[in-house]
Structure formats: structure tokens, C-alpha cells
Image (cartoon, rainbow, N blue to C red; front, side, top):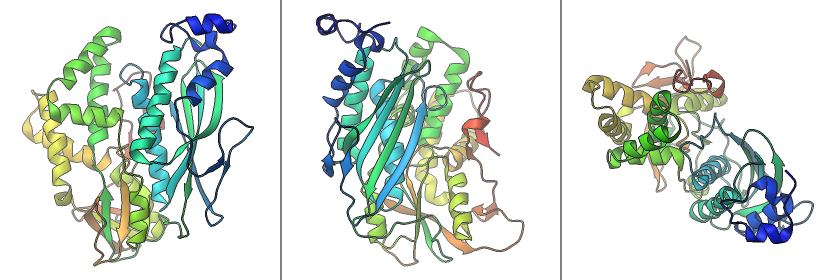
Length: 377
């Protein structure tokens, strides 16, 4: 569909106007009017490229894709939720290097039928998410294209502020294993949403989600955390200042990401579920409220499993030397052991070896939502 004349675009309400009728130039202006500039941008959006300050000459860079289907569903995610989710996943990666997020670029591939109001809400969501999670970090550019499948690509930049990056390969035997943020909350929310998606579509699905959220605060907290997680991107700098030896973002589940840290560091890590009791209780309460017919023992087992394998909470899995006073926002969840050449997996849970299970988009059967766990074994 060709873009409408400028006067017709101005007269058409944003919830009626589509991106196909709006055209790239007007859509870009609408987005840039809503997102913040970056404090550390020498030249922001509007030219062929942005120019950022690079602190001591080193720049942390990460990128992430969000595709409708494997990463979010319009059936249950508002545009502002998608924006917050995209920001959290990228800002956490920058923080995990011990850096401060400074800027992001946003590339959107949109079906031409997408309402312009959805894109405006997405831009407002980026502005709110950046203000909440990484004040001073702004949008310095991006790209717009068309696609049958809604796709968002974020590239995030960070400043090490004169320090060295904290890699996932620095953990040492005797270190404390620590975590920021919740564990299992997003995975629990996703499991409940996909349970609904198996049995309902369209308006019935929307009504089912509202009914699910109405089951109480415990259910609402896990569903909302999956849809729109929140992180504190300053915790990466705090962990580095406290002497963190290794760090990474927990995006694919505690066990899977801990195994990556362990292998990179040449160590074995142990997770103690007693230190995750609050997380297990929160997930169990949500499952109990949402699944009243399930036996208590099974609910508890499901809760424990979701806490250790559920992804997309975006906390920072970090190791600190023994005796370190952990920064505010972190809690100890285990310890680091020497590695040996035996058959024991790189991650122990309460002293027992556990397979490194976690989120794997290639393991999910997207044609039949909920028919697979989406978790590697």
C-alpha cells in the first residue's frame, strides 16, 4: 500500500493508520519524538550513523533479536511490554560485562498492517524502560523495514568507565556464587501462558489471560514478570567494584547459564536450593493458584524445576571471592568447586549432578504452543 498524503496522515488517528499507509519517514519521526537521546552520544539519531563517546577507548557491544512467536506473542504482550522485554535482555548483557549501558539502536521489521499506534506505544515503552532500568541510556538510531513477521533487533552499547570487563571465564574454586533478581518467575509466567495457548485462541485466549491474572498477586507477579521484566543495569558496575571474578546474564535458565560459566572458567559450580527458597515459594504459590487441581507434591517439584531451569529473568549470575561483602541486590546461592575429569556435570544442585537444562528456541515446537517444554535436556 502506498503511503497516504501528508495531510491525510495527519488527519488519520494512530489506531486506524497503519505503518503501510503512514510510510517510513513519518513513522520514524513519530518514533524519535518518543524515545530519549543518549547522554553519551556526540551525535544521535538523524544522520547516517551515530557517534558515541567510548570512555577509555573500549566499547561494550551486544545485540539481540526478538521475533514474534519464539520471543513474544502479540496475543498476550502489549507493545510497551515488548519494549521493556527487549530492553531488559540487552541492558542485562551490557551490565554482565561490568559496564554501564550508554545507548541502543532499534531495528524494526513490521507487517504493513501494523497500526501506527502500536509502534508509538512501543516507542513510549522504550522510553519508560530506559528511564527505569538505565537512566541516561538512549536511542541513537536504527532501521525500519517490512516483514510478514514482526521482528525487533536491539544493539546495546556500554562504557567500562576505566575498569576491566568481567568475563564469564574468571570464576575460581572457593568463590561464592551469587545472583541478582528473582529466579524462575519468568519461566513460571511463560508456562502458565502457554498452558492457556494450548486450549484457547483469539478472544477466548485474551479472556483466559485476564482470568488467569485475576487469580491473585502470586499469579499476576509471574505473568507480568515474563511479559515485562525489570532489571537494575547499575548492578554490573556494583559487582565489578566489589571484586566480581565472573559474571553473566541469566537469560536461558540458571542451570544452563551456570554450566556455561563453569565451562568457561574450568570449574564446577554448586547451586543450593535452600538459598532459593523465596523463589520456589513464590513460583509454587502462583502454580497453586493457577492449577488448583494439581497435587501439592507435584506443584512443589514443578516450582523447583522452574526456578533452576526457567529463563528470561535476566538476573546477573556472579562469582565473588570468599569473604566478599556482596553488593546490595545480590544474594549468595552457592559456591565454586575445582573441576575434575570425572563424569559429574559442571553444575551441582544440592551436591548432586544435574543436566544443564534451559531454554533453547530450537527445541520448541512453535506450531503447537505448549506441546513441548522448549527446554534442552
